[in-house]
Amino acid sequence: MIKKIISFIKLNLELGKVKITVSVTVTTTIGYFLYPPERINFWLWPVLGIFLIGLSSAALNQYQDRFLDAKMNRTKNRPLPSGRVSEKGVLIYILFYGITGTLVLLLKTNLIATILGLSALGWYNGIYTYLKRVSPYAVIPGSVIGGVPPAIGWVAAGGDLFDPIILSVCWFMFIWQIPHFWLLLFLYGDDYARAGLPTLIAKIKEYKLRLWTFTGIFITVVSAYSIPFIAKLDDFLIFKALAGISILLLLYSSRMLFKGTKVNYKLNFILLNMYSVLVLMILFVSHVYRMEG
Image 1 (spheres, rainbow, N blue to C red):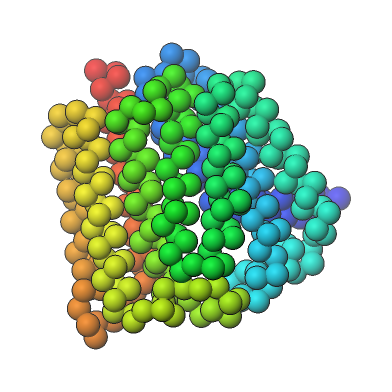
Image 2: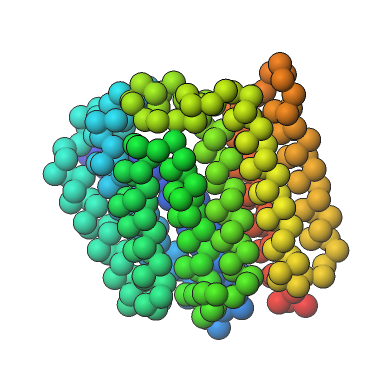
């Protein structure tokens, strides 16, 4: 009985791509606390709502891509292509978590947060999921989704959606996702080609894509530095912390600039992801420190 329960939980987490969904809830949380919230304990509701909608969106994506996933080594063991769950079961999962998450946002936060949450789902599942099948440049409009979760947290806390501070954070998350995906192409380009997906790695030379990826990483660093300026954070420690992690990232990533140099794309991918987390944590800790001060 216990094994069945554990297996059921694991299956639910797999369908919801829980690692990605958790990262989305983390950025929602940081967006919430970047705005001085009137109700500190209220943060759980927008985070829970986005988590549930994220589970629904991820499962819907797996349903939409079930035939493509079956062709790729990286995804062929997912619940649907492996036959561990039925299509009907996935649809029930999608509806349950999607409706529950929407109700949580609508009843416990506000209308703008709810609209943003549903817009992210619509953009990811209704536009990007199909656009990536016809265009190797789909990642650029697709990356818009990465900038939405912080905004949801921000407006749920009472912030203005068009405040330059949260817009700069959303811009950073948008830009970061582009080189993040291009690094994945170096790792899984053959898999994407096997599934018949158009990719830049098949369209342009590897060195050119390396240059594009480094440029994307550089712009990501610039966008990270823009946040404290826009937010008018005059804490010198913030700039020192950002400088430290930015220099390390750029130094290692600069290997992509030299032809013939062997590049560890997986390590680059990990470092870029760590960078995004550290940038958000620096902003979060700085905000908490200023509130206590």
